[in-house]
Length: 195
Image (cartoon, rainbow, N blue to C red; front, side):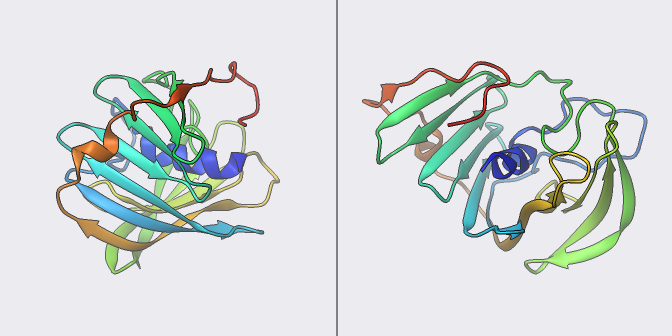
């Protein structure tokens, strides 16, 4: 589950500033909903991602029924679970943190060809991390991540996700709102494993 959450963070943590090197756009330019299948050893299930471009909000729907909303414009977010009726307020990642789970600070992208995933053309990128780890991503010209695969650390099996369906169109703002009437639970301290 930790590797899944790290892979999902790629979708919700775009880079805030461009650097001198060649980099893909990591924030979709328009509203979109994407369904992903989990890939890698023992991976099962699907994950959904919805993006509201004007509001800079992402929603990630996890296989366990929980969902995460990142409001990049406000620098805030939360994770909620409808069945448990719980919500956890999450701290915003620092804007210079790279892409958690795939590109930590010091990581870099290298163009590596082109591909088509879920009927969409995408640029493939090798991702080289400062700790020696490596990953791969396929990202559309308008910033939709269609494939993200890598190890959480060097030598670990690769895990990730790959798009199976992409649908461009307006996203319902109500799906990105914090649910009312849910019990608020504390976020784990930094470095603690997720629950």
